[in-house]
Image (cartoon, rainbow, N blue to C red; front, side, top):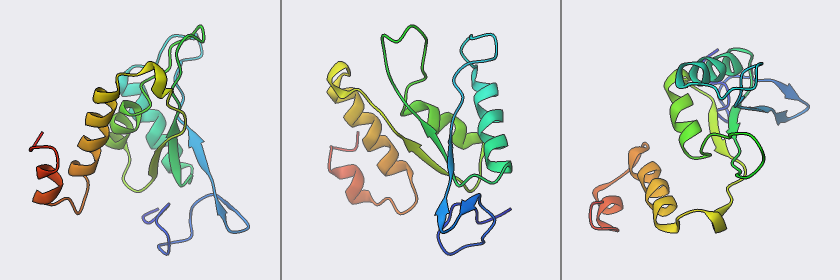
Length: 126
């Protein structure tokens, strides 16, 4: 089902009217324990195979259960998908280390298609 989630390419994603639908990545097994990396990748691949246009991760702390990091979960699940969008919905910035979040976001920027040498030089190549 190549082209799902890419505007103007194919028309195979889950749609109602003109809207495309995404799915939230699962974060726990049926027993309630956190999902390991392999299970997260399988879940993302299954969501893609079902025809959803995107996979989403949400962050949070202090909720009584473990949620994966909302920046790392899409990174991990990208290993098992080929054409879905990846997104972060909620990130509680006030409880995060701002420098770490900025560095992770910058890492996404320079690792994606279309990155240039100028992208790296903005922050001194790091």
